[in-house]
Image 1 (cartoon, rainbow, N blue to C red):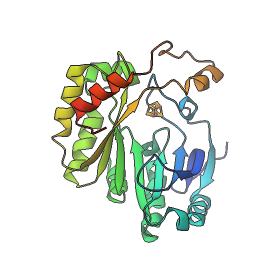
Image 2: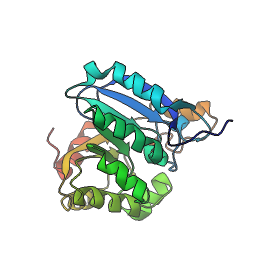
Image 3: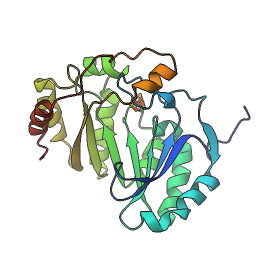
Image 4: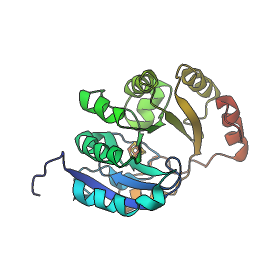
Length: 244
Ligand code: SF4
């Protein structure tokens, strides 16, 4: 494949022009290709491979976004998700610089499991909101669930707090994996150390993305794991202080 300048080209998985769940208002959602984690519950399994997806230029993506500007303004904006969007940080710096000039709200949906390089810091300075998926508050369980420990993401959360960058925390609730009471209490305690958390969202596990694993011919480790019951969801929400 032809080499591209990664400052001006992104590996894109897909685009959703009217997203309503990834940040405030109506969002133009850019799904970038590539992820360095291996979350057992991933419902975007087809985003992992950096060789997948297709290159799109900054200019093309900007044009697409500006076509929807009237719909996403003034309460919505652009959310970049994936995969792990921060793997394409150089491109995102260029994109967010352009969006800020247009006064468009910028949001990144990330695991935060990256090194805080100067590029990542520059990007965060252009970011209005981070949707931070805390994978697991327990380091060992985190490794088992997503393939890496949680050190980087907790450091990332503290950095956001220190820089006054708003964040919405997300936690996937998986019976037998992330619903242990002590872990949820520890998560709650961790969140109280952060001063820019605007919202905590509990995302009940569902197996809807399982078919993508099957299509790729890979084993789905959570086969047979049930979705959490209303009672389990309510209990976890209570611990995390989320009002129903
Ligand atoms: S970080 Fe997101 S895209 Fe990557 S493996 Fe986990 S759930 Fe999937």
